[in-house]
Length: 359
Image (cartoon, rainbow, N blue to C red; front, top):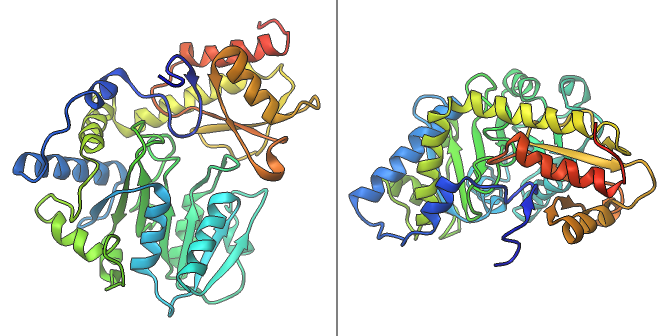
């Protein structure tokens, strides 16, 4: 099987636990029955609890990628009467900009760099907006924004607050009530450590009020909400991934809850960063999440060459960047079923690659 014996440190898909992998190896069951409706309700309940979602919030389950979740939110919740402030700090922020362009949503492309937006009130354009859109963790460069500051800014200015939490859920803190978040987008293949193919959109009551009739069959939230009342989806769900999600949410609870999951990711990230300090690599950003470390070579080596050499010579996979960043940075995930022992596989490979002795 392709890459089966490789150590994986890519930010999606991420390393999965044996318990979750075993579920994926079983026969996919039929799903239009009460038993599967119970699975859906359990998944919704678990997600709402971990996000501290406002009372009355609902979850939509899409058999689709995270980008589909991003686009569907814009399609269903914004109109040409809105004016969105879109945080654009990289490839995924740029994707939200493209989605707004595609659906003709008036917006401002707010390009940011070298800030976690704790000073959003000062930095934001002096315009009148109706909504605020952010990728909480800009995965393309490993940059985490300050959701507390963004949430306070949204509340003060009465902005409808949309957060893509795809690559920081269960590894970095997020709290819908405390941070005044109206909509959260999550995908299966990042911190939840499941296969790709399932995206969840969490709608607080204020978001539910904004759901509108749209010219789309598959992405019509009203249809999903109606079917969700009986624990079903209008079209075939990612059945096996839903079963894995149910088990994964129970696994997180059993292991100490979402706070413990975040603590573990933080410990693994700190362990990795501390142990590679002597190597000719430096952090790309000062605002890295627990989910991921983004590194820049300081010895003139090309980042893409490091990625390829780790894969070819050590069977270790990290994540390259493309475009004008291909030689500048590579990314290392701390999401999923990580441990210090597993992380040592990458640390030891890097030391050997550089011909250095690990202390």
